Image (cartoon, rainbow, N blue to C red):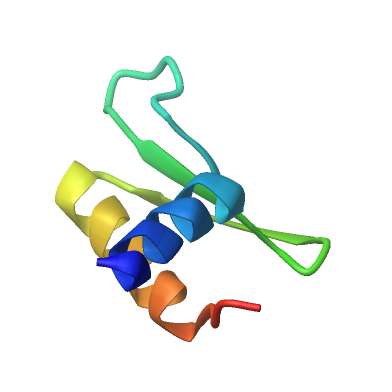
Length: 63
């Protein structure tokens, strides 16, 4: 269970926000900050945004 808590902490730390910019289409923009660098990507579906988030977090090791 401790590992799950650590993972949640990493989510809170690295995922700044998922926002929906005002547009005719709904885009979900994911922002991730890792070691001072911000990576962002846009998706048309929330599920794809979540998948991207999970994929990145797999590579973020607890320090």
